[in-house]
Each structure stands twice: as C-alpha cells, then as structure tokens.
Image (cartoon, rainbow, N blue to C red; front, side, top):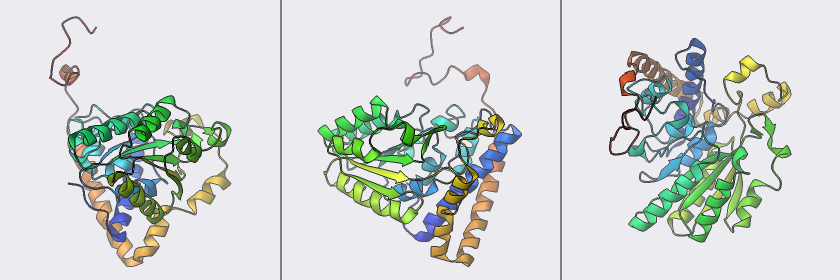
Length: 326
C-alpha cells in the first residue's frame, strides 16, 4: 500500500524527501559510491508528487531515466532505492536495475526506463491488461519532451485512443532534450500530439504541486470512469544538468539568468508557504533523519556476488546454456 499524499503537509514532506534524496545521491556520485552517475530530478518534484497524489493503491506507472522522483512519490522505500543506485543486494532490484531501471511491482511501479519514450507502451499494456481482467486500475506514463518525436509514443497514443484505455500520459516538459532546446526540435506542440488522436489534453504549471494535482485528479478520474486516455503537459525545469557528467564536461547551453529565473519558482518554496515555517522545519528534520538512515542502510548493504551475474535473466529462473555467454 502506498502512503497517501492527501494533505498539503504530506505533499510537502514528499517534495522535501525527493529533493533531499537527489542531493544525497549527487554527493554519493561524487564520492564514487554511486557509479555511472545519475539524471537528477531536482526542480521537477511537483510533477511526481502532484500526479502520484491522484493515484489509488492499485494503479500503475512507468517512469524514465530521470525517475527517482516518480518512484519515491509512488511510495518506494528510500533506503532500498538508494541501495539500488549504489548497486547493493538490498536494493529494490538487488542492485541490478540501478538508477535508470528501478522498479517495485508491489507498488505498481513497472520500472524506470533508460530508453526515451519506452515506458509509454508498457503503461498502455498495463491498462489493457487491467481492462481485460476487469480491474479498476489506471496506468500513468511519465516521459519528457524529448519523447514527443519518438514513434513508440505516438503509437501508444494511437492505441490508447482507439481502445479507450485508462492511461494518463504525463509529459514533463523541462525545455531540453539533453542539451537540445525543445523549441528547436519539436514541430507543433505537445498538446497538438494529443489532439491529433482525439485525446483530451491540458497544459499545467509543473512547478506548482497543487495545480498538477488538480489536473491529474481530473485526468485520472475520467480514465477510471471509462472516459479513455488523457494527456498532461507539465511545464517544469531541472535545476541541475541533464546528467551528473555535465559538470565534468562543462557544457554551457543555459544562461545563469535562465536557471535563476526558474529557481525562483522552486516548487518547495510554494509548498512551504502553504504549511507555515514551523511545520516545514519539523518535516525537514524528519526527512533529514530518514535520509541519514537511508544512507546508513545503503552503505551497510553488500555488493552482489559476481557469480550470480547471469541469474534473473529469465522469468522462470532458467540460466543460459553453458558456453552461450563468453
């Protein structure tokens, strides 16, 4: 069962948890505990919290390469998610999924995905399976603006519309596909993509948790009632680079003025105002203690035994035949 995000205090706490988790993960990348780097979600927290606050216990979601926020907002244990990022056996997926493929099927988290747009057809499949089984479930597919030109997303929109499946497509438009401005790469618009398939769509302030929540509740409610798919374009911004490697590469594709302008719209600041300074400080202290325990847990967990590297390749446990893998 997921923890409900049904009050402003709980939503603020989750925003702070995601922000603190990502800041801790950045520290562990720099120290070498997390190898390979991560795609930080800092700045976009309102989208994950707003959307997930509108979901029920049985609903499913698919995520992206920038997926820690979605996974946490859906209720995953931050200790086990951090252990997963660090490649430890106590991770959500025994250290095998890492940052870009974390999943928790018990919570309906069908996985982050390193392939741009690839979560959309999985969400459509989950919605179709729920329909076939007579289950009251909605599926949500998160993706970025870089997925708007991917054929697999358009195919998913088409199928969901044709079969009137209970899917909510959530585009986190942070303005950049890696370093490429969306304005120079996307003909038409995100909402236009949805309109072409007859899917109801709305543009939302993705820096405002309550605005996202309101739009998500309407979209999820319509899908659950049999009204078919919906599409949300959440205008948001990542405060950090596309990937932690960016600092080392010293890329310069955004001006300091642009970044500071978006930072002034930090979703945590708006959410903090709604609950008051004293309550906010108390929740911050709770989250700090929770993250300290998550770090202790992750660092105490063992690395997987290399002898088991070929385990879990098949659902039934079958291993590759001898000599099939060099």
